[in-house]
Image (tube, rainbow, N blue to C red):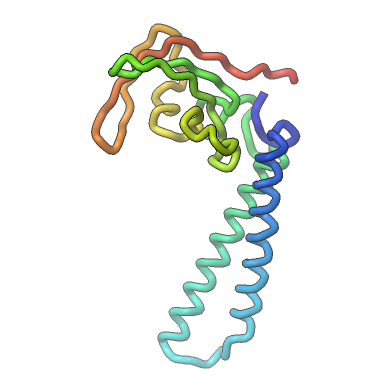
Length: 162
């Protein structure tokens, strides 16, 4: 089952709801500021108006993304945005021999505090490389230090029915 809509962990849902509330308030404040500006101005004023419109669009996009996440709308059943569904658990062996279990989340706000090293987002380079993989597969993925390789030991997809 995906970790969207009603299936979000309570602490992740609370963080997303708080972020959405905060962004709505910030957007309202910016919209009020923009509406109070003098419509007659110079190029600098025009530039500020364009920047303000861009900022409003950013707020609208982020709020819409949070609302989709909170309600579970706009997602293919059982699929994350890039392949591995949130809730998938994988066990990998890194090149240095370290074995680690990782859980896939849809967005960073779903990561419980203190579990940052045990999670990855569905659109991370490693998660993208692991999408479609099966146990026993060697996978190469991009890192800031260049290509890296892991051996996929196990993959557990989330259940679909609840």
